[in-house]
Image (cartoon, rainbow, N blue to C red):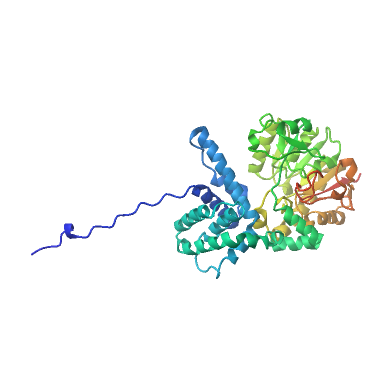
Length: 463
């Protein structure tokens, strides 16, 4: 009797070898990981990038150069999606015939990355689609959406430019709570100008130890009226002339202004509160002050110490919570660059709208008031206290000035005047406070190049 042997069994089908990923997939996957960290886990963009890039470069000089270019692209693509998130989301929704339902994995983020490349970087549709399909196919919760991906990208390729042209970019890319706060405080026209400024890339600003004209010429930049050196094309900061010699440090033009409110501080004992990463600490040292830099974060303080070492500057550094710190003796001057929502820095940090909210504002306002209360007690009679924040929220600026008047009878406001400080007239409010918006240009010859939104007030302690 004939038996069914292994020889008689039908042959097993050959397993197809998996197709290699399309060229450029690795950088898009890294950008996807960065966006997941920011948008889902509320991790700051710089930290997310550090974690993605926390691998040693390989392949010698050529491999390191490739890695450097890849990192620059991942940063640029991630930043683009975060900056234009509202517009990209609107285009994506317009290309859907029905809302997504059920488990979709990373599909939406993959689509936003693809749309950013297609519509803002003008990457060819076939290249965008190939990588997006590969990413979707590798995601168990999204692989069933391959046909939808193709349909959305095809429609976006045909109709996307018209969709973008019809959008209100300023409004779409600004969280509702921020728009409403700014509109109530400054009006619709100023709010729109802030939002549009936030869609532009910020230039690279440097504060130099001395001779800004010489360094501007050497670095291919120009000197702003405020003394900051602004570069157009910077490349790798660490490779620029003067970096290793410690002749300058990166600092936005607006951030460099508050230290100037003290006047001559040669030999004065000055406290820099919440000092890290140390730009203002360095300014105070160069101005001749004896500086005590205080911050509660060991990681941030290590960065400040490294910066001072590179710059060959000396300052006492203290790691502690300001609310429990007690210095002896009192200081001649105090700079409090208080923790804040940092909404004035959204050009440089497009992740902020996705990380901060109304509840953060309320908590930070309370913390700022507590820090002010501590700082007042550490100031000598006749000494100056400069309070500043890189925030556009009046609660963190003008509102805190009102709190000072209501709480501290020993402080008086020192009204600022534009001309002696070299400031533009419209930077100073009627009460003598410094209020900067990101659409204001420190150099009128280049009106489209603004600076960070900032607030500063100067107080003097009564004798």
